[in-house]
Image 1 (tube, one colour):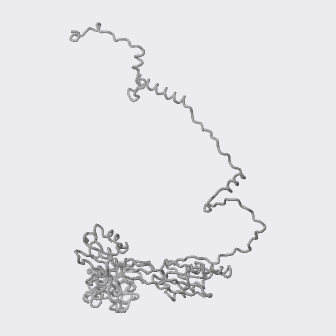
Image 2 (tube, one colour):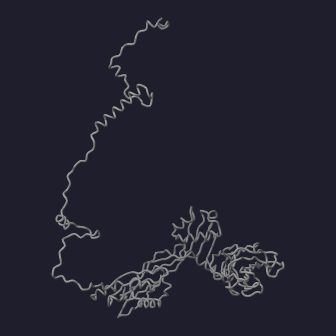
Image 3 (cartoon, helix red, strand yellow):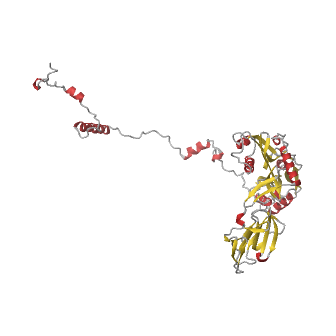
Length: 505
């Protein structure tokens, strides 16, 4: 009934009184200062925090340095005594040990004796002269010139490659103001020749030591796989040869899309190895690509008309398209009818005029043969080139002609210089293009030339291909027994030194 019928307020029991311990237990001394900001609980929590911080600061003990005993410093006498017993490396400037003063038995030298011989090495730099290298090494000018003349009798000085090392022994000089004489000289003058010189009875005697060289080209053949470059490098091909190979075949096929993983590359490079063990690799000689056991591409470098280029096995050379600009000046008059600036009436202008400074170079637009070079009426100084296939070009008003009739010229070669000869009002180039003898608009024609081999030249070309492809892959890398250079009768540099020491020098 008491739950169903609410009791009157007078009947409710009063809450029991709490003791001070219970009230202290319910007191929250560390309330969250982020809630109920400004309330009694919040202020009580702030007071507690301030009291705790103040207590921590008041009881902080502070930091003081700790005193420790140190080793006493050595005075000058003790330090010198300790240093005398040390071992210090000479490379670090060691000067340990006790130093004794000179006694009366020591006599100072009036002159310091110099070394009886000096052994040194000189290196020939690019563009340097042989005599100048010797002079920089300490050889007198007159003797350096004499040595250069003597060496040139065995090998042209121009054939000595940059980077060649020259071993020298300079002997005793007669006076300090004079250069040291050359007692011995040795160098590898060429890949197949060594030169040694030794002074005998006051005269330098030279001996040339030929070195046998194997010139078998290096042939490298293998499967393309994932990467032609990595595969060829793993097979031993030099990086320069692979790059040259990719450039050559890249003019015939697409390296990225036309080469398959199962194709085989065939690379032949110039290669020489000496009987003394050294070897050197030269330029690319042959570039081939094999597919399904049959040659898909076969390229060989061949010289035709004085110019080297790459030809296919059929004897067809690389394609050269487009014409070079005949001069660097701007176009001042185009092809077509116009009023002639000197004659005063309208007539056909059968070419293109290029402006330019007097004496500016004029270039052949493509390969050809000079059909005419000289004066030609209103054209003034004039050059005409025949390019084959009924095409030709003409160049007029030149100040000077730089070619002669019958001469073969290549694309971009200077054939003359801009002038104002003939019927001309100022320096410029009159450029014409002929097709079967008739002038046509030069801007309407683009040259495409391909050199071709015929007759005996083609037979020699194919014979060279058969010769290179008959080489076994890796034949040039077959190990050979290293052969020491024959001991010179004049003696090596070590022999010269031993003899000098044996003579008591």
